[in-house]
Image (cartoon, rainbow, N blue to C red; front, side):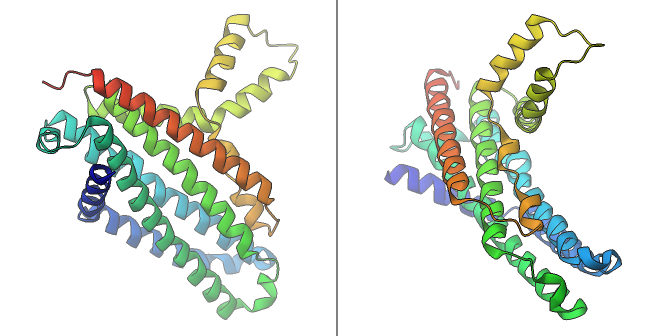
Length: 270
């Protein structure tokens, strides 16, 4: 555990030194501020517009971690052989990977937590500019639950970065595979629903249906974690749903990290 903690802390500190994080934070906060001003054109939907855009911005801010920072912290370590510096110490390959993941865990949590504070500022600014009568349906319980689930979906992508970085020899390929996983995770549910609907003019082969069934069980349904629209409308998010999705995400992350460790232990880094 000491090795995991050391790598996680080192990764967290290294990640905070990257200027891209501060650029993302600044751009996201500016976008949120502009959203408050623009929302005045939507009359009774002011709170919904603010929450829609602001929560989407929080998620986008979180997604910069797996697609930019995580690749740099992990894939490039392997690609440039800087990993040997850490592995010469009493740290196993599995501890290195898990430590890297928890470093990304902390960075993602910090970024999304700061942006959640931006959501609060935008709602406060909206109430100040337009009056509290437009914000009576706002539920902070639903907002926090929706953003927590968004954070879990980003953590799954971070785990995918760890996996793809151990099975590929290129940071570019690891990025493409992570993007591929993201697209599948957000679209597989719609594809399955489409195949379940009988369309008379379109004949879908059994091989395609079988492929979709396999993909459905191999990749996570990331769309299930997207409950931002419900929170923006002031709808309650059942605690059981949050608990089930948390368990689902945790199990998926554990499986991905175990697979990553197995592949990485067999990989020749020389």
